[in-house]
Each structure stands twice: as C-alpha cells, then as structure tokens.
Length: 213
Image (cartoon, rainbow, N blue to C red):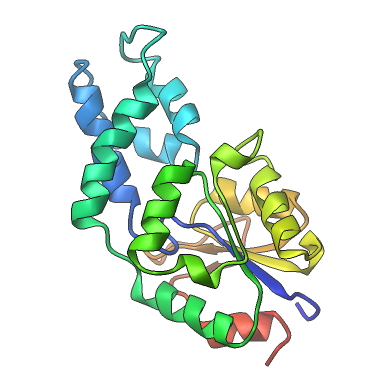
C-alpha cells in the first residue's frame, strides 16, 4: 500500500462510541409513536444518514409527512451525547500520533453537521483534521462515494492516495467506490468478507500501510 498519504476516518463507531446512543435516541422517539425498535432495525440503518434512517422507520410508524422526525431524534440524541458520549482511546491516540507525523487527516461521516461538530469538539479532535465532511455537505450519503470524495478534495489529495477507516460495510464500500483503499474496523472481532478488517486502531500499523514505516 505504498504511495498512500492521507487518512479518512468515519466518526461514529470509529472515533467515538455514539452508535448505541443513536440507537437509543431513535428507539425513544419511535416508542412515542407506538413502535418498538427491534434488533434487526439497527443493521439495516447503521452507517446511513438520519434522513435515510427516517425513511426506513416511516414504513412502520404513522408520522405526519410534514413532521421533521430527524429533528426530533437529533434533539433527543444531543442530550444523550452531552451526558454520555465517550471516545475510543485507541482512536484518539491514533489521530494524535498521525497528526504528529504530519499525515493529512479527514473525517467523512453520515452524521449531520451539528451532531458531528459536537462529537469531535467534545474530545478536542477537530483541530487534527484538515477537512470534516458531514452528510449535510454532500448530495448523497454512504454507500455513494460523495463523502469520501469531498474529504479527499478537502485534504488536496487524490482519492487513490487516501486510506479510509470505517466501521460499516456500506462505509467501506463508499470509500472503495471513491477510489480509496479501505479497512473495516470491527471492534467486536468479526471479519468482513469484502474488506480487510481490524479490531482496533494503531498508528504504527496505519503508518506502515501508508508506506511511511
């Protein structure tokens, strides 16, 4: 993998442990409409934008077409993030180490701008990234390549010279569609049939992948 120079991280599930909080927020809101979320709902929506998740759940709940379900969920989620959000220590250490080596870094996240900025700022991570791209910044979310293309453009690096880390199959697929090399971060130790998989982040390993070690 020599010749690669930039690294693009997903946020949720990679940098911060926000997925369980997001699922709780959706479950809390949906419960108010008489729908009890099932374990099968989360794999179907993980890694997608809130807009896509809302479209998924609107099949099961009676919500006025004019009601902003996403805004309702985001308000609930903001409270949970402020009270309970935690960062992954290996991710924070990796980001800081790569930045210290002068490696250009970016974030490509399915989160909305407000939520994404909140998550990164909470752990003083924003300053390490040359570009932070939210789903609000592009026309299409994952698995379309738009987020990763925008991240590469923001770093001023061709996608073919970027390496992406995502915790979902559709995220890794999107990075590959953008022309990047991708690794799937599966903290539960599972393996992907489509992408190289790791269970934790390590700066030295990423520097080796980048051809800098």
